[in-house]
Image (cartoon, rainbow, N blue to C red; front, side):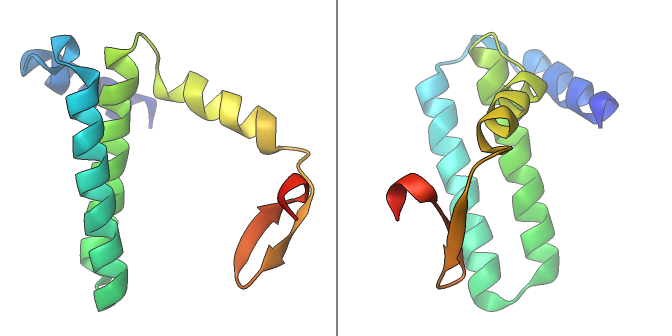
Length: 99
């Protein structure tokens, strides 16, 4: 995974995305999330796999544009959720503070 992340970061740098406006990159993130939604709505597993991959690619680039990396962002998020308590409500995990 680390090698793939480095390849994506290098690809983004070669395309000049490392210096681009990160608010524009976030638009790409949301565009790709929409493609994930479309894949789920259609039950298209191949499109879903591609969409999830595209979301990860756009997030790697967004993190790099803000002098972060995917690992540190994921690590921070996991640290926050690791001991989180809550329950499933209609198929969605709701944290205890929001119940």
